[in-house]
Length: 66
Image 1 (tube, rainbow, N blue to C red):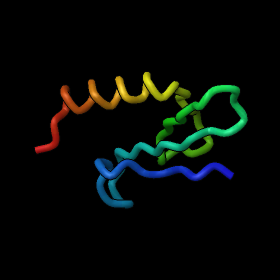
Image 2 (cartoon, rainbow, N blue to C red):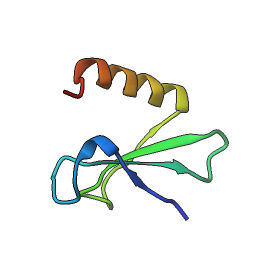
Image 3 (cartoon, rainbow, N blue to C red):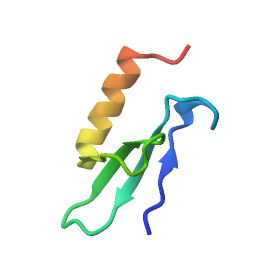
Image 4 (tube, helix red, strand yellow):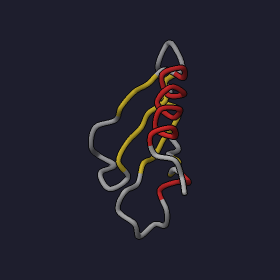
């Protein structure tokens, strides 16, 4: 079973800009999935852990939390 976790930076359940992440089973290497919580049946971006860390680092540097 895949357990999707909502980003703590996404705000409350009622806000529309939400991102969810999950570790995805069934791959030969570890994969982290990223999806839009408003569209759970939609596409999933699959990232290696190093690529996911790079994405987070770049997002945090471009969009710092006030």
